[in-house]
Amino acid sequence: MHKKTGNFVTTEGIPMPVTYYTAATVTGSAVDMAKYHNYAAIVHIRGATQWQDAITAHVYEGTNSTQFSTVAIATATYASATTHSVNEIDVRDEEMTPGYRYLRTTLTMAGGTGNMAGAINCRFNPRYGPGS
Image (cartoon, rainbow, N blue to C red):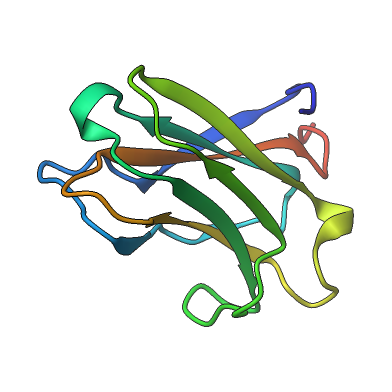
């Protein structure tokens, strides 16, 4: 986990679904990392009966906002539990492939009859200081 400093920008990545997801993958929105050094997806998972099997978060990189690699540059798996969970999966700019500037998170539900999860995209540590 990295210290979040400087300008901190959040965008909706994967909203909390109104309905349950069974074994499926939910894809989040793309974020442009051109002006930031760090990215984190804050993953919120509902507990009790809403978390019935493992949930895996993947961060993928892309050269534009619609075409992404099929190989994740960061992965975290959360086992099922009966309590709510807030987790973080993060990427530093030096971990990204040269020429790639977009990131997005996907959540994959392994199974169960229903899972509720969401993710928020966070960008921080800007590459450039404030203008004068």
